[in-house]
Amino acid sequence: MKPPNITPPPLRNDCFALPAGVNWTPVDDALALLRSRLTVVTSVETALIGQAVGRILAEDVFAKRSNPPQPNTAVDGYGFSGAAPEGPQVMPLQDGRAAAGIPFDGAVPHGKALRVLTGAALPTGVDTVILEEDVTVQDGHIAFHGPLKQGANTRKAGEDVAEGDLVLPTGRRLTPADMALLSATGISEVAVRKTLRVAVLSTGDELVEPGNSAGPGQIFDANRPMLLSMIARLGYEPVDMGRVSDDREDLRDRLDKASEQADVILTSGGASAGDEDHVSALLREAGAMQEWRIALKPGRPLALGMWNETPVFGLPGNPVAAKVCTLIFARPALGLMAGEGWSQPLGFDLPANFEKRKKPGRREYLRARVRDGQVEVFASEGSGRISGLSWAEGLVEIQDGACHIRPGDLVRFIPYGSFGL
Ligand SMILES: Nc1nc2c(c(=O)[nH]1)N[C@H]1C(S)=C(S)[C@@H](COP(=O)(O)OP(=O)(O)OC[C@H]3O[C@@H](n4cnc5c(N)ncnc54)[C@H](O)[C@@H]3O)O[C@H]1N2
Ligand code: MOO
Image (tube, rainbow, N blue to C red):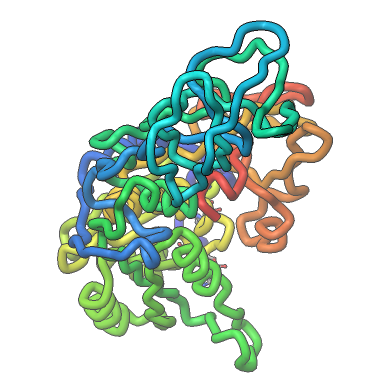
């Protein structure tokens, strides 16, 4: 029998070729859209500072007390009033001493010196301190060499923070250093955002739980353990929604549950438009689907949508693409929803030790690390090469317009740490 007369399309064999007539969304436009559409979703609660590290401030915090609260001495030594002129100085000692927490009761007459210990409030009549190492003490007197400026070796009240100053702004994710700052400025509890709950769900008939036996055609679910731990590292509450097979009704059911238990949903797999790509199909059906074809490698088929008013990031199944999309798109979006605000990862421009050609018009992220001050990239760009994710210590961002990177060209390296991992 004669075969039917069918005209095939020209062979491109490039899943990243920009199809004619399709408008690919540049990464920055997709990010701008996310940024403009999303808002803070978490409510506010009070946390004692002992429990507040890693939490996000829900309001500006102002100092209740100055730091230091009063002028004090920065060293162990002897305090007196005014500058000491050049040359040898001898001063009678005042009886008593001032120590941290045990102030000197009374005033020190001009011309006399008082024994003072680091942190002690300066008593009336003392505004300058000589270091004890520079002093000879004998017969109720001290002797030292001038000159010494007025105010030497002392700390002014409020020189660090004055009462009423803004100490930390809304949206700040509290660090261990902030615990010291809050304590010192008289703050013992703060208004913080409840922790954002992020559901993680894997889709695909081929997936098996690590620890179980995997038959032919099956693979272990690698994305879910990665994504759950990324969420925890980013400071959000991971909500494990397990795995769903490629069954639309099961997936619908699981998305319903996830939207009850979490503020945001991350799925992986089924994001593109194949026969079994149920995530994108359901999001499209729900009517609130931005089916973005993003000019990005890896991670083009990122499905974004709403499910029961809960934002869903339909991440591509390939683990490298799932991680890149999480870092580039989900992370700033989660920050915004959590009350932390939109953030850009800090990158460093360093010379490349590799050569790469690419099509202009799409952004690329390669698994990378820095050795001897140069950026090296993983040997393969394959999106299923999970080993490269562990090999890498960050991503190198190749700009949309670039088409040929030569060794020695500056490229932007973004360490995983800059993403909060
Ligand atoms: N004809 C085309 N095929 C594909 C294209 C294309 O443009 N034309 N794009 C490719 C790209 S790029 C990606 S990325 C994937 C995206 O696919 P989906 O998001 O629909 O994901 P799946 O098809 O379900 O899975 C892709 C791949 O990843 C594996 N996978 C899925 N989940 C997990 C998991 N939890 N742990 C480990 N591995 C996982 C899955 O087995 C597949 O091998 O589509 C390409 N195809
Ligand atoms: O988005 Mo796919 O290869 O980029 O993994």
